[in-house]
Amino acid sequence: MKNKLKVVEALSMVVQIGLNMLVSIFLCLAVGLYIDKHFGTSLTIFFLVFGIISGYCGAYSTFKTLIERSTKDADALYAELDISEDDGFEDDEAEAVGDEQRP
Image 1 (tube, rainbow, N blue to C red):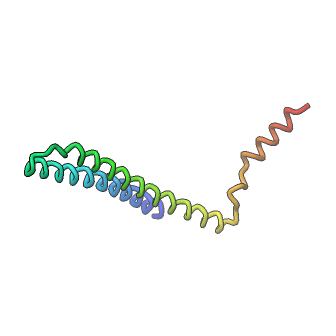
Image 2 (tube, rainbow, N blue to C red):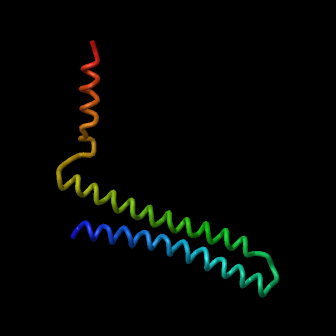
Image 3 (tube, rainbow, N blue to C red):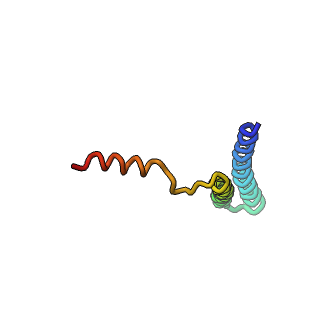
């Protein structure tokens, strides 16, 4: 059940990022087209680029929040299991291999 909840949470984050980008791009495009139509300017490209940049900034913000949340979850898990992040077997194995190769 816990795995299904994580899958649903991940899918909701993907949908949120996609909708954030789409709304930003199409809303700015619509504003640019509206201004071009009523005032005879050529600002559509400017607003389109602004919408793309805005969409990527929103996606970056969402990813940053997701990474911070997962880091907090990992830190809580390490604290719960009383494990430090430096307790890895990779370093111990590398030292053992290095000792074997020395004459």
